[in-house]
Length: 395
Image (cartoon, rainbow, N blue to C red; front, side, top):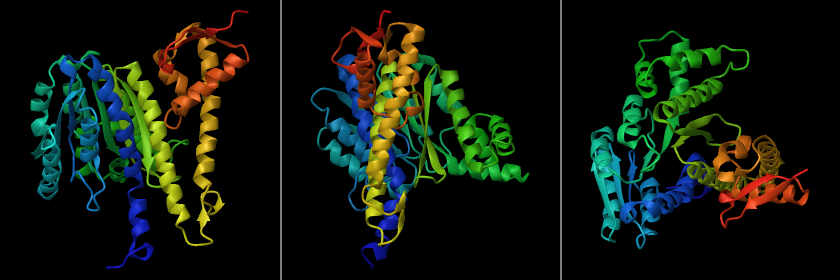
């Protein structure tokens, strides 16, 4: 077997760049979910579901989503009582998954692996989570959980802000582009069309996709995939009284997204912490791409011309500076319009267009710059930046 770059090592790493991003979000955000809702839950109890768990661990020993979740839970074994469920449809993958889950069960974790479709296990999981915070990670390779099933799960007893319910799901851009292509050609008998109808909870996506594809501003399948993912997130959020965040994820910068990550929450704190988690995951993703570029052959063109080791370091710095600029402008506008504001209660508007690459230190830098110029006054202090209250300076 060939080894090194000639054996496709770099190709393999590049293929999983999108997974680096997704898994970095799990590493960053899941411990925060366990810590925060778990602090107010009865007995520190929570439930976590990975509905498309795969093998749980890559063949080279690198943890995949299931093991990352198990590791996060293990780190809270002394302060939280977390029950976790991992579902996998493919039998070959399930056999490997069960081995991984059983390892952590032997370490004292309350976890179980389940074969079959996630839909077959949802009712049991939701019943298990009665009165408890619930985190759902839904990461299919193709069509996701039927819209109606997800909507009904998030309504009813789980419609309120407590017990907390949050969702991180993969909405396939590749599937959307394929379905849009078939639709655009009038191939309505293709099986992918009703599959998208089920995933989206109706035929609305057809008009959205074709309208975007044929509009002067759209004209691309990428734009159609963006529009459908955004509308999907807004619809499910509206029907379940949640707030959505949509993050496109691509294999390489400048390429079409492979999927969109959709995050759903009812918590302002969730929005704030997810913003920081995604921003840090973005940096891990860029650093990974930078490592790929540093392994390129001499003379290969990098992101900004001749490949250099500091390409991604430069981009990370540029994105941070842009985040500070955006957040500074938003904070100035918010305090002028609203007066005194508690930062966390305005997370979406505060991060604005920087949501997806800004991290909390960008907020800190923006706050300090406005205080230094006398435009902003600290009204209520707190050790957590998100809980601080600021107002405009009195004229």
